[in-house]
Length: 412
Image (cartoon, rainbow, N blue to C red; front, side, top):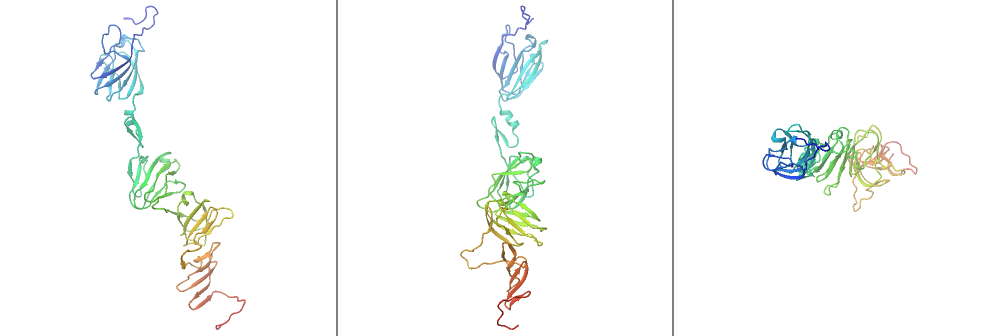
């Protein structure tokens, strides 16, 4: 039989059916919708097939009854995979999973089976693929992908894992330290949600020389939380705020010598402690913001000083002797003593101090002032050297005395 026009020699395309919906309840043989094929199981150019069970097949009509290029777009709109086969179920053309669409076309019509080409045409619904595509931070809900932040825990000394991406990581113990992985390893945009649900302060520390908000570690008081986000080079926090129940956090700042420029993250800690063995004078430069600080100098001085300043021209700075602590107000330019007057009290108590670091000294000369050398003694220190001691027996002056108006009384 010829399928060429006797008038023009061109291929004759049979009249086709554009669309057909098929409820596939059993293996079904299709026929071409041409004269002589009296069947209801005709093939259409677009077929939407709904199989009622698995392992069902749909056989295409004879390949030698049409021309090359005869095609069909077949969509599986059901819940089961079915197979499209050649005529009389002789061979498999393609299997179509739920939600998939496949475009098939004849490339050779020499036999009843024919030779069929296949193009994957995509999906007709996102439901099956949503489950496949749901990675970390996503969950398939029906036919859509949705955000997901499943809970997980972390213990003291542990490091967040790459698989905790987008998880809500909860700390449930007392105080302790946990570690962030190298930002280069987890990559840019890795993130996790962290919540301190425990009873003590937990420190989140970086590794591999990374920083978080410009510092090496961040403290989380109970009930505090934040997003921890990798930039690929370090970490930043989003939503990090101080608990209204635990309003104070502490910074421990190791220093040795030179100038240290504190970050806004560091100065957010009201209580600050400087540690280390000094090998030179240390100047801590604070951002020029209004704030209140309680600063303790717990360094080993070795004859060197620790100075607090905003770096503003003409601004007042404060030198804090080793072993001492001060409460300071910063007005954005100057550091000022917060305890100039003790309101409502007639008693002021000082630490014993020493000749090198007297209990009561001067902002511009911290080694000159008064201190308590031992029980029952009042000492006077000038530039770190004891010059006089007053006790129950009288006044002892270390050195000579110059008196402009003479001395009366007593025996010399």
